[in-house]
Length: 420
Image (cartoon, rainbow, N blue to C red; front, side, top):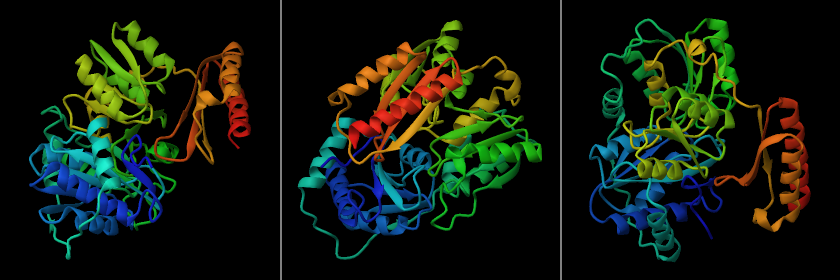
């Protein structure tokens, strides 16, 4: 059984792989791997978070600090600041409330390598769990410390005094930290998605539904909007006209030589625009681990995905959606003007629920269908399974939206026939 996907262990709470036994096993595996020293835990607002924390602690034993409800990048920042030898963020990011997950972070705040992750998984699956008879952990809310570390990553002169900022925190992990940080910068914050009840995280709001905040920006006259997802590791900007500024546009605004790292999902227009500026561009598989390793190898400063998950070499150790958005705004608040020449190729993404995930190369009809789509007007075609959900992504780009839509729907129909 493979537990770790592209971003930790994730699934419906109470069902494999997200069970109390798996959480306890991971806690024990972390204690064995990292040895003595403090292990830190943070979580988003899902009602299962405390139960999962208790299961983790039962495996970890003593010397555990519960940092409370915090964004995943906050845990990353605190670990890099010496809070512990490793940590776990309890979150399922943009997934619905019934799901939850376990994201492991090392003492430098970064996600573990694939090799370390494999060792943890082997230990977890092969070990016997010697549980502590009682739970033992310290509660030490980390919001104030995170805010200080966060503000240190912004230009010293950057302020938002009097700027009306519309914020959507998705009833998630940043429901308290994001308004506080924006307020500290002087912004007039109009916030939605800041009343979590354990079940409303990501429900019709946040980075997966930016159209909600886009409409609010238009209605209220806000100068900019910021949408975060459930654990706030990604952010989507809304310009003053209500236009959604996705991760590709953010990469363009943050780009600087020698290059930018994107993924197979990055729009072809981004690659063209960067090359026109003399900035290099490379693609990686989906997943911030791939983006981060390529950034380090190339020595490049920024990388990310269209979803709004962006990494900054001089930012926090993992992507922080709010920090990314504010770094963009530090270059100028008028996003309409700054992106007046940005024209992404129309892209259609269909997320298909699938009963199984057979290797795509074993479905010969798909290869023929992809080639036919390219011959019929598509500029790019990509099929890939989600690493965290039972879904297949069908992505088609074309110079005309109706062509992309038609070809994506045709491919999606064929996929269902092949996999059913």
